[in-house]
Image (cartoon, rainbow, N blue to C red; front, side, top):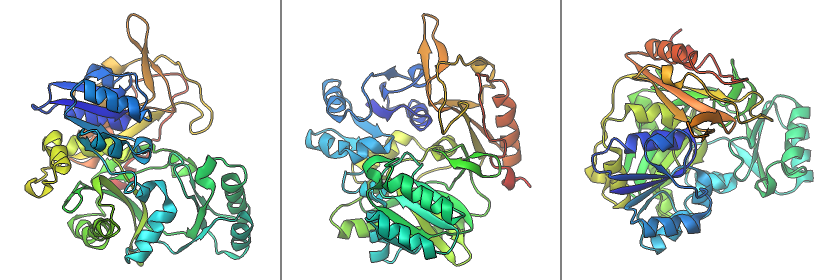
Length: 422
């Protein structure tokens, strides 16, 4: 089979790494890919959002299945376009992807179908939203409606912080049209977990749970990022909690999408909070999580292409996923200044020094020169992933190997999965 993976991050590198292990795969393309994916297949210099040229490439190169990594092409309607051209693709339609692309739509679905979530109100007027904040209890959550690269949510601890976040979203247009509407909602407290599920529109197959770290600094301090690390499995979220999430959240939302006339196909990411008042949904994403994928995929024993084809062919009920019992820890190595301003073009050294059982998934990298020197080309540069018999061993292995990799002004969190070994 010829497979095309769309995207350029560590998530796409992890997916390509797993796909390349399938005996069914003869040719692997990654568009546009990065310095790491080039070692697994052929990087194709087409942007992930250039869906017309991606479709033309898939058609002319007889691609058997396209796997979409990031949210932007899904929201642009890549799945609809490919299907109209008779091309097989893994991912939700543009309408179904609104579960991620519009927090207002997602909230409406949850409220309409009784899926547990935070209480919240939608505002289209900055003046009305600002007025609400003057009397709202703290802390308070302000969310931009549309896509904001994981940075459109503020958990405000003070009135001033809340008002500034609202102004940045609705007046200063920090996220463009994504901030035309906001949701102001109660702040949920508890332990957060990501649970992903595959769906062919009707059937559901759960992936293993994982936890990620959104804040840039240790101790969950600093601004939100696209994710600074992850681990799987979390001890506090076992089979009982997983089954509860399946029955309270995932089955109801997949059934709701059928009733809404937009069946959901692909992978659905549920961000959950285990609150004192029970499980509640923080958000839905319409694709594999990043960096959660980097901690989940190494634990998957099943052939990922067989699984994805079962979703695309609507025969997920014939598939049983098999998982490794090992613990997995992924740590993001980021450029200095991220998620704010940062420099690129820094040479990366030490990649050849990591242990053979360690995965280094590239994100913001590219190769330069005749000798293929790997240099930094983004904010989140690498995700280093290690597996172990328990979380303590996985942590020890990942941090021992991170110390061997160097680039100027590199920084990373040192507390990923630490709470699991205390």
